[in-house]
Length: 196
Image 1: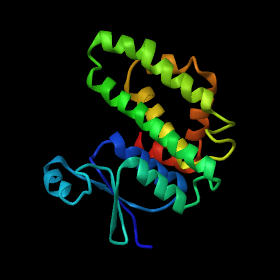
Image 2: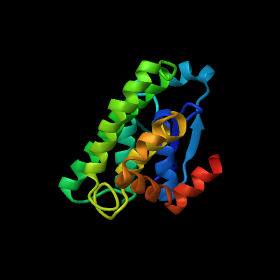
Image 3: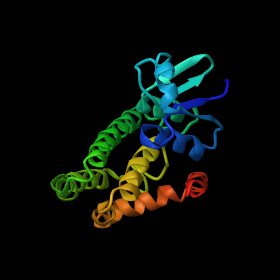
């Protein structure tokens, strides 16, 4: 198999979960940060006119969920049981729903009424849902999978970049412990520490 090339804008957004996944599993990849001036031309090469994309062996995959699934499965970072396989996909999709809520909140972060709704309704709903889904140390028991990296990424985005999210998150002790545990993965922690 040829080398991997991950393309996304020069910020975290939807591409960061893919970067974090590659670092966690210890697989080398080219981190192609597409500048805005280059995006119109690069966009023509993408399947859906969006990023992230993953290129390898003359092929190109689009959509973060599909990329997480493919890379995790190929590198044995995904459940082999058919039911757990489907559950893991559903968890990545649910994390994407949460990510959409994050992007909306980020755009409206100066709107006090929207932030009030976020902290009192949206975040508690998502946090409680994911906390109830924990089946052990991780989402699907005691093994770390690609779906965990997807959720970790969006939890981290809220905590790091939206003031007030950390206080709401602290009320969910099981989910907080889970987030801390995933972040302690040696490879992932090394990548995150390098970014700081």
